[in-house]
Image (cartoon, rainbow, N blue to C red; front, side):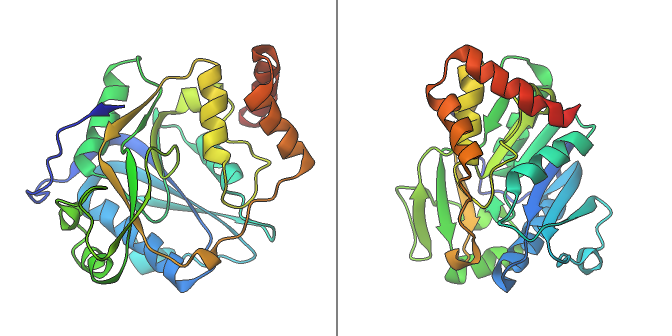
Length: 275
């Protein structure tokens, strides 16, 4: 990873361009808290950024996302009927297949990245072929209580000024250091070339780290930036555990322990979804 000067402190007076990137957000409204979080994240994007389109990918037995609540023409809502544990991987892959943008920003429905760092990631991918995917953070911090409420009202990353893993407030919980999920800025062609997320995965689990391991073994270039990512608190009971089918276990074993030739065969199979 590399450091990036944090410019938090001055308000965003001019919206920051995402250069026509597609923002991919997967969603299942299985609690009011998670639903409120996705609306907050979308309002934050509208207040902070310009030149982007959201692919809001929802999977459930019935749609719970109300497009008219925000009535934002930048949001394209795609619903898939699904009564099994949440198919995040499939939704991400479907969005990559639908998209025609050069860049994809995979943004969890409750994650807020530093907008200046996000801008740096977008510009770097558009100006150079050296990196395939940026993680615009190196640590994840959960925010709740008064701090979360303040962010939901002000919709500004500046609410988090001065907070990092070594300087937490009472409303913050340190979740993890370097992480491969949360928010990624990725070249769409690279995502597809390395097979995308394993579409067999269900629920929330290690699908992000498996993609990282698989793609890095085959030469994909990842880079992270020194900046905190803030996660809007929700009860963990709103999640469903990942389903580890025998097929998924076999794929993960190839990713971790298989030969390069076996990983290449696996990726070739995964790429068929995008054709």
